[in-house]
Amino acid sequence: MHTKIAPSILSADFSDMGGAIKKLNAAGADLIHCDVMDGSFVEPITFGGQMVKNIRPLTKLPLDCHLMIEHPKTQIKFFAEAGADIITVHCEACAKISPTYLRETLELIKSYGVKCGAVVNPDTDVEKIFPVFDLCDMVLVMSVFPGYGGQKFIPSALGQIKKAKEYALSIGREDLDIEVDGGVTAENVQEIRAAGANIIVAGSAVFKANDMAAAISSLKA
Ligand code: DX5
Ligand code: ZN
Image (tube, rainbow, N blue to C red; front, side, top):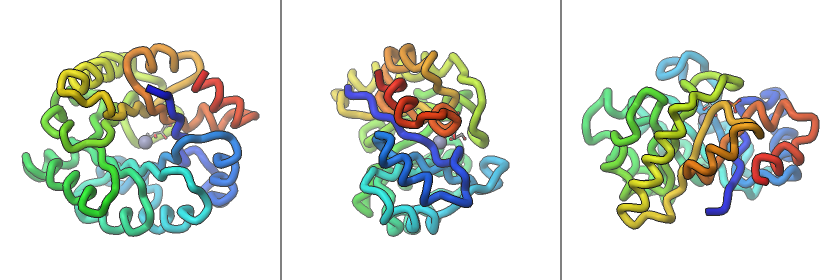
């Protein structure tokens, strides 16, 4: 599958988010990864649906909204109406509520005509979300514990990606996107892609680079 790069605006300057979006448009990003944190599921608070609504007119790129929040069902309406193209929710946040909450949330996302995905933390076996692969457009394998940009890639994520890809193929879902998030660099991206990930989130690797376009193309090369 064609590799796509999804720069995370978590690493942008929040006082100039519009400027960051325009730079990503010009630099060859394939999606824009929006890290939504609630101060509860993860320690920091970033932004909510209003940010997505405000950046929506500034780009034609798909807005990939990664919800690191408790009770994700309560926020789906706001992100869908704000113009999100993909919304992903953590299986850990859903499992706290009920065994059916993840599936219900994914169905709710789809009811707005938005693509949906399930996310697993590094210490959650990806097998936990196999039962919802049928509903997902994408699965997101975390390669760092969520909350902060600039962390080191956790190598066990490679096994999670492989497992997810193999299972997707075994159920005839060669179209299922496998996204990886956290600590991706030009040095480790090859093995991540070889494991089966086709959507690569990159925060620091893109925003800390002097040449954003070169950083994005080196992740795709
Ligand atoms: C972590 C976020 C990631 C993060 C990636 O909670 O979900 O998207 O911004 O940043 P880097 O690429 O710097 O690890
Ligand atoms: Zn993310």
